[in-house]
Length: 269
Image 1: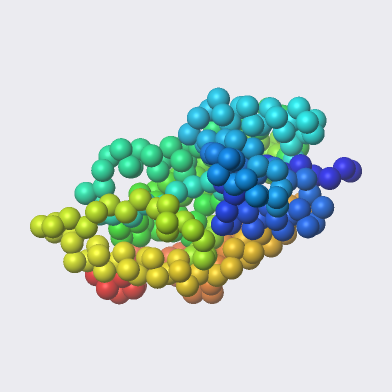
Image 2: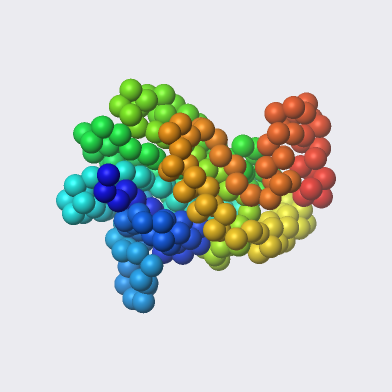
């Protein structure tokens, strides 16, 4: 078979760039996407296409470009996403809508755009980049957790709906990795007079510290490569530090109140 054709959203930096660069070295033909390729004039790791996951027309155009040129699309990696922090009560509603448009609706639009082609060619693989945060409601990261949790559940549903077409759908849930996500994350302001002021400010320091000291994104790229080469990939594939992955096991076995107490202690709440 010819080289597999891979499309990665959010491919200009961070985890997406690491995945694309690594797959290129393994012989894949990789297309990445970014909202504005002109911002990356010297980017040469792989081809970058213009795509905004919040604009369905932009999605259709990019997918059509790949299929027109390559006559197939083997792997979609839904990686584009944004971070958000803030108290649930005080986060501006327009920012809540934005994070759901990017982290949830965007990947859904992407999947709907590639599924007809994958059915036509008799198979394909979709990998949704969710988050370990999507398996639990984290304080002051509730909306981020909600978007990634929703994407994980859609992955489970769509995987069963498309099985008969030879299409494999799975998710990779990274823990904290050293990327530029913090610079683009929306932080609800720490408001004077807020009931959450002290605890939110404290949690914010912890959240940013976790990202800054995170692992190398190449670990996620290795996980993607392994999944592509599996005939029957698992639904859930957490990737990250031992304690972050172990936290998922604890959530499954511990009583809710005990697990909640662990989180409260971690965030000093």
